[in-house]
Length: 93
View 1 (cartoon, rainbow, N blue to C red):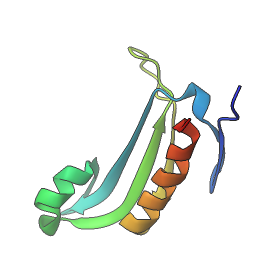
View 2: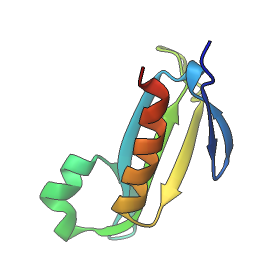
View 3: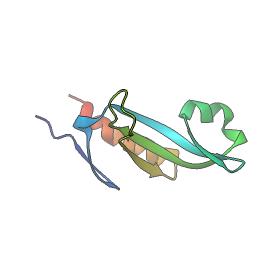
């Protein structure tokens, strides 16, 4: 079986348990901080302050209330995309 351990800045992440993986942007809108999609930020990003870019590794099974997530945070979109490329390598044949 292929090694599915991603060595990240916050430690090892076991990608074999991954349920959902998605990029997002943390924004500040008048003191309210929220996680938004990259698409949303492309449309409305000029109305908010971008705090950081994140890559969310969600291990939470469907219908489970307690969330099991690991989040990598990046200062730039380029850093986020670089990490996404690294993670995608684990899912290539």
